Length: 382
Ligand SMILES: NC(=O)c1ccc[n+]([C@@H]2O[C@H](COP(=O)([O-])OP(=O)(O)OC[C@H]3O[C@@H](n4cnc5c(N)ncnc54)[C@H](OP(=O)(O)O)[C@@H]3O)[C@@H](O)[C@H]2O)c1
Image 1 (cartoon, helix red, strand yellow):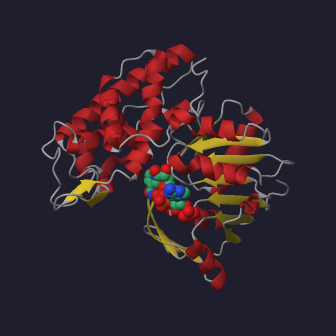
Image 2: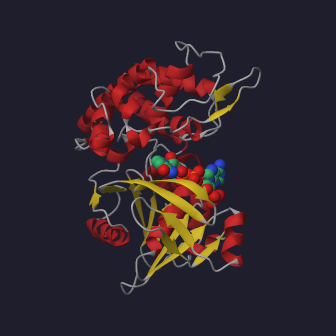
């Protein structure tokens, strides 16, 4: 990496998280930021004008940044010190395969995913097998929510995490972990904490159980909307049904059982993986008007207000259905929930609600095109 002022960061993915983090990184003196994107409009915009990208941040003036390079060629990563994948889990593999050959071989290169859920460490281990100089890492969550993207022009930052939790692949040395922490701390204002084990990320309850349970409650076999179209779009959390919250609570309890089994079998400490209700209450605090139950927490969390579920026009009747092409299925079910189901199977832990919800969701999305089982290590938990 050389002198402190020379840090080459390559952000992969020109979406909301990619735009926002690229602008944030570029605020740090001495950091060179390249954006690898397939979006021709973003590339053309960068070359056609010398305008900066803008990130609108809450309660502060907008941040602006002129990126050092924007393009579609993996060769942008040839000098990278840090590579940050910001693409959904179901498309990480092709993105990583595109950049791997371009990565430098003569220095450490820190290759990570934001967020790192769905077992990013296992995928990266496979694709970076011939790259001992690659240090694999992932962040437990996004550092900030990002929305309202105008590609190549601006993006809006939502709520920020107070602390950033980062995990590394089990193969990484203490020295590599410490260097990574220093590097990320240079890029982010919030404190960066290293997790002991990547499974703390993989097992943290989040979208994989949240979206699948809520959809099951909304459109599954016990719901009033089963086999019918919704008359109007629905919001994920403000419109969450009792049934959805019930299945989510049950799934979360099963996740905790799974954590217990993983701890016993692997001898690792997963006490940082909290039950979902507690996790949300601790993360959002006063933004939740009624934190009594999981249902009331979901419905009254200001940060969750008015987030629409992905809807598509119903094919055979007026109204809407939940879009089976959305990330709630293609990412969260196929790459997130599938990991939990497989862990339960390997460890002989019964997960009846998770299994039922998984099976229904997979049926709804008309089967899995790919899944986390494509890279789930055949030897785990050995
Ligand atoms: N946005 C948030 O606030 C938020 C909150 C929580 C978690 N997350 C997580 O953060 C990750 C990124 O989310 P995001 O909201 O930033 O996503 P996004 O705005 O949809 O952007 C994702 C980028 O990934 C690439 N991509 C998406 N679908 C693809 C496909 N089928 N094939 C190839 N490339 C594809 C595209 O990059 P190019 O444009 O360069 O092709 C796209 O711009 C996801 O895992 C998401 O679950 C985001």
